[in-house]
Image 1 (tube, rainbow, N blue to C red):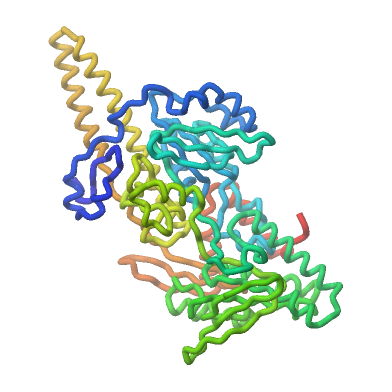
Image 2: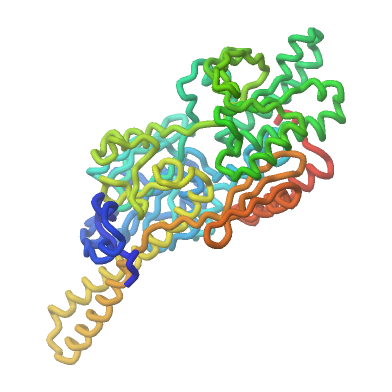
Length: 539
């Protein structure tokens, strides 16, 4: 038996297991997840009685509404969220083994790595979304979907309260779960800085990108009517706050749009537009190696993006940013930036649902960044609950790469657990048959079958902890250039940059698109942009 393997438990893994060595953990025998039986369908009676009515009210597609009243012989798995982690579970799980219920406020998966490309039209919005119903269809319609907000989780009664988001008369009810996966992600934080929430544009969700595209178009149109030099200068100053991948890639895309498209339509106007990137740390892309950081900063200077590092935003008004920068001698200097458009691309905060769970579970009281999970992604202090992606607090960076691998891992765990559930039902039936059987030969056969299935059951109860396989980090930095910290053998990082890295960046992001549909749409958008230029007309 692998030293990293432990047996599945009804509480997944006790909190104390984190303090044990892997050799010790492998020897611990814990109760099976499936010792307790579910006497009825795993959805509450009120939901079961009105399921078809609510399904019709929600306007579900044929693939979703084909889901029947839950099978009482199967456990109910509720997945909250439709981001990278949840989609990783949905695409890879054996859906035939569970009553699967998906709850999400949006009816699509969003390919977030290419979101910075959409405000300027390099890639279109609809090209980076995949309808949830397409994912359900590929699972044979075995997943029930509610376009709803999960408003509360009762870890004692094991229920999720949901509220529909797109109905004139909202529907509210509880779903009872046997297993729960939390994949609700995170929301933008403003760090309590006055004025950010009121005046900044964000780049977290699809609607954020649409608003930002409309703003860019409005700025170009408005500038045609302004003759005052100072007013034009302020209007045409775009300030991006956040030197991580999102901020860097959006600043690069915006500068590409100015240099490659706007310069051909409004050459004089293009010369006046200024893009500034503000970062509190000494460097942008701080998670990259020194070589690629330097290459990025040199490239930004070459393509005329103004870099303001070691600069902290203190206050924001409708047209001015108050900031403090650290000078080379260590002294601090206060200054202001007049701007026309502020894009806030930094910081994650826990969502209200995550925060409510953290407050209600004793083992989560000290949590700050998200739900504390163990090596098996099980939420500490709860029973039969897992968390992945940005709503969990782990030692890994909050990236799509991490969340997707976590989702695939949990899919394999649940597929394995489904086999455990099925074997326990079979054993229960065999043991019942054995008690009533009088034929000696048949009794011997039943005992042999029970012994064989028991051995198989014990093997299937073994589960290994999640191990993240870092494959590197990449970012687009403008002018058909990218940086790529490639992770190869022995976890050694090999830096790549320039046009070669850009080609790899395109290939990697296209490969990461979760369906052939989105792969095709994104590839055609890139071809269209290269051939005809970007289009940011109002939608």
